[in-house]
Image (cartoon, rainbow, N blue to C red; front, side, top):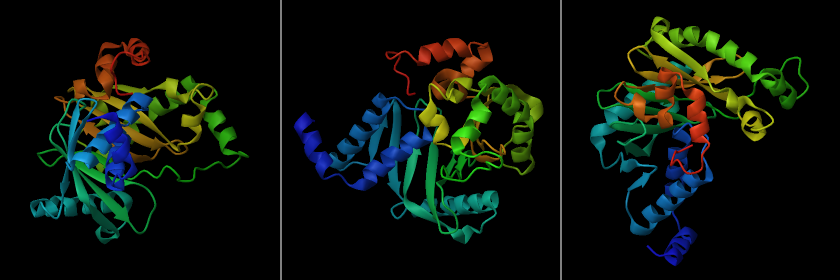
Length: 290
């Protein structure tokens, strides 16, 4: 495909493809470099230009299916609405599944995963449920990045965040100490198989909490991500609200997928080499996603 053809296609691109690319980026749960953004957007342009519903980004193959064309997935789509309703305390009828279903089977920890996206009339936010082929939940998301945070006693959002992140290691220790209780709440409600006694490592990346270096990131999100490596080589990511540590999104990675996700972070946690991993991740030529 020639460069001028890409530019021409960008002028007439169906916004659905851009939305799909943006959601793929959102679901990677890493702070992306410009390289990944460019890869996803070009993939969306190519998809629009060629009239296809599959593209590769960062070594990950994603197919986009239509629920209308695959009615056999209606039962699982309805299950997703029930799961979201139980997690949020709303009703299943408050969630309307979108027609686009994403299927992923690639090298970033998504082995045979189907993703369903929902609109919700009762709450703002982004709602989705991803299922492995065996029906286990890979990811459930209810995060509203614009959700208010409890800043009682603070005059501004900046002052509040600086109170949390002025010493990232203090906040890191607080969150990691709370990790067993956070996971056990999900376990008690039947969302995850893992429980606190099987946590091998709990890790909050303090590098992302550096207000000076990553001010835009810290101050534009009410959530941060906690990583849990389990003693059976499975793993979890928990996105929690910074003011009360309540979990809005969670992801589960099977022992098979754990080594291949998050650019090898969980392998580094298992080996105790997370600082070396971080230095490698910052290299512009390592081919990592984020």
